[in-house]
Image (cartoon, rainbow, N blue to C red):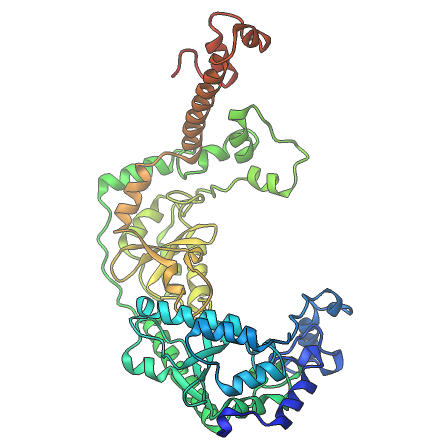
Length: 497
């Protein structure tokens, strides 16, 4: 039996000794259960940051942490069942480890998975990879460790341990092949690099696993390439060609001015905000409800209003100051709009941002990493309106309006941030035409409320029609025009269908 097919008994003994300490079972370790004097220290060396690192872990954290999955014994019959499903035998070294130590939940990184779990993942990868990526998962690679999408695999043919780095779905054939990175020549060698290495939770390396020289070089190369790509991405984000965007049509501009100067129509929320008691009272009024003066901060906020404040017309001095801070000239249609008023009208609850806030928002975004993994803000996108963090932005290169909303991301991983950007309108003209053609939020709410009340009245009438006259009379509906009485109770005009 070759070395790759057998794990040294001495190593098996060392593994058994290590997993006695539950907090050291895996390479990552369990920070909550790690003794305080052995916990990982803040890399900055700052006692304040160390305190922050421990802030969520109180003295008796181990008593409240989720229970650790046990390392369970497994028998040949259970292994045979998995082998039947797989269609081949579990590699000898992995079989030995499973029988002599236990069925997973220990080892480098997150720990080796239980036999049945990695077998199911293997079957899924074999079945789904062609549809997902147009490539076939290698038949020999058994995904024994899961790393946030990546896999550490045991090659059942060669005995090698291989890391699959999970490249982008549209990766080239060359990058697909390069995504399978050798880690160790055998399962035993891979485990040797973990068993005497401190867990990450006690200050050890990533995954509590000591990488070989080749892996260190691969990681360094990958980091350099990543830094090069990030620098190129930042340069692309900073660079743009300012386009000469056509002015707004005078007729459109006059219609915008008329609505902007209407205190109840200047933003979608303006009319609701002007109701006695503010927005909350306006929403409750159709149901005969009122807010109380003793309402909490949420009610207070809604009463205060969300429709913004109509600013005075911007002057040439205002435009010059804004352009100096922005580093480029404001497009003509923006100057036209801000000459009506310095924000507070138009699409979104608060309308256009005041000029000073627009400048501040833009400068803040281009001065720091903005995306979830440090992506730079595209300098060509100038924020115009803010709707609870979702921004309507003017693309300075083509004049189109882009909607930015992080809620579109599935998660905060690489490649997700681009999902935050979506087309909203072909131009500022189109954006404001759509606004002029829309009604205010309160009118929309009232219209939908009327529809709902009418439907509720119809349902109630249908139920009362099924009752006897005596039962209807007991409900105060004994008159011949009882249907109109039902409608009245729901606030629906008599005879309304």
